[in-house]
Image 1: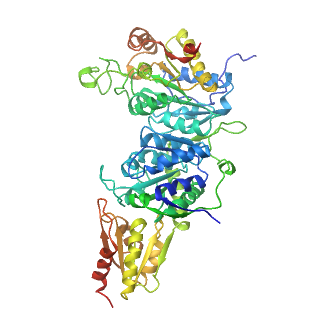
Image 2: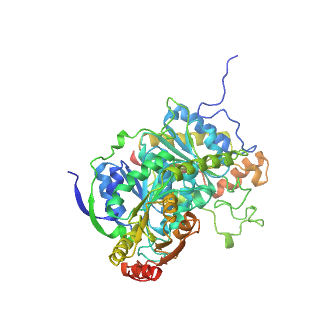
Length: 249
Length: 355
C-alpha cells in the first residue's frame, strides 16, 4: 500500500497535547512541512513560548529553546546575531507576545531583526485556564472578566499587526486565520514568505494567526471556526499590514 | 613584553572580555557602568563582534541566553537595579545549565538608590538572586588589573560547570584608573570548541533542546539533585582568596573588592603600631572561601568583617568560623566608602590600642 499522507519530517513523532479543535496543531503542521519544503530543518533553531505551546520544543523536529515568558524575540536576536546562517523562528501566543513580551517584540521589529515570528492570537490565556488576554475582545467573557471585557476598566485589545505597522523597521507583517481551508492555505503562504524573507536576509517578518480555542471560549470546534469568521476577524481584519517586497518592486 | 596601559576599571573589563574571546555583548545604559557599553560598542566593532544596546536589561539577559545557548561566549554588564531586572533570565539560564557572564558594577540601593559605590548586592549575588534553587559563580576583583583578568577566568569556570558567572565590582572599581598589564595569551574565538548543548541546527546529529522546565513527575527533583552535585563540586574546587599577614594575626579582617583595598591600608597602619592584624580577601564570593577562614579561625581569636553594606558577607564568615570566634563588623551603606583611618579606629577599639 502506498502512503500518500503522513507526519512531516519537520515534526517529531510525539503525541501533541492540544485540545480538540485547537488551532496550534494546524499551524504546527504548516511549519513542520515548511521546514522540509524550504530545506531549512537542519539549520533552524525554534523558540517555544510560555503558554499552551510551551511544548513546541518537543514537537518541532529541529533545535529548540524555551526561554522566559515573552522573551522569544530577544532570545532569537541572540541566536541570529551569533549564528547568522541559522534560521530562527519565535513561536508565541498572545499573552507571551502582546502582554508580557510587548517590549521585546516592538524592539525586535524596530531593529528589523532578521527573524521569523509566528504569533498565535486566540484572544485568551489558554494554558492558565482562560483568563483575559491583551487580545480578548470587548464584551468577551474570560475567567478574569466573567461579565465580559469592560473596556472602561480593562481597556481595549491590542492589534499587533497595526501596532507594528507604525514602525519603519519590520519587513513583513500579515494577519491570517486557520478557521477554514482557504484561510489555512493563505496562512501557509504567509508563513512560507516569513521564512523566505529570513532566508533572503530581508529582515523581520511576523505572521499573526487568528486561532481557535474551543476549550476556553466555551464553544464547540465548529462554533469556534464560525466565531473567528463572524466576530474575531471583524475586530482583527485579515490581510497584509506591511510587505516591503511589494514596495521594492 | 606585555603591553601596559593606564585605564578605567570599566574599560579594563571590556578588554578582558575581548581577550577571553567573547564576541557578543548586549546591555542597557546605567550609571556607574556606562563606560562598559560605550567602550564595548567601539571595541566590539573593531574585532567584528556583536554589540546590541537593548530596550531593557530583561532583553539583554535574554539575548545572552540565546547567544550562549547557540554555544558562543556572551556577556552583559549593568548596575544594581538593572541586575535585579535580569534575575528572571539568570534563573532560566541557571535552570538550563548555560554559561554566561554578567558584570555588576554595584551602586547604592535599595531602589534607585544612588550612583555611588556599594556592596549591597552581596546576598543577591551569592544566594542565587532569582527564583529556584541555584547559585551563580561570583568573582570579586579589587583592581583594574583583576577586572581585566577575571572575565577569562569567569568564562572558563562558567563553561566548566555549565553555570552563569558573575563579576561583582562597584562604582569605585569601575571609575578609577589604574595601570593594566595586558595578557599576551588572548583567546581566538574561532578556536573555542562547539559545546555539546549548542543550538546550531541539527545537521548530522540529533536535535538539541535548551530548557529549564520538566513537568514529568519526579524529573525536576532529579535535575535539582544533579545540579546540587555540581554545586558541591564548585564548593570543593573553586574557593579563591588572598591572605596577607594572617599567619601571626590576632585579628583577621575579611573584606573584598574596594573594601579590601581600604583595609589593606588600615592593616599597614595597624602593623606600623605593632598590632598583629592580617587580611583575608575573598576572591570568589560564591563559592565562599570558607575553608581558608575556618583554618584561620583555629588561631585568630577575632575577625573583623568590613563591607559597604550593613552586614551581608558577615553571615558567611560566621558560618565559616562556626560562630566560635568573635566576629566584629564595620559597614557603610548607601554608597559610602570607609576610609583607612576609620577602619584603623575600629581595629584599635577591638584590640585596645597600640602595643
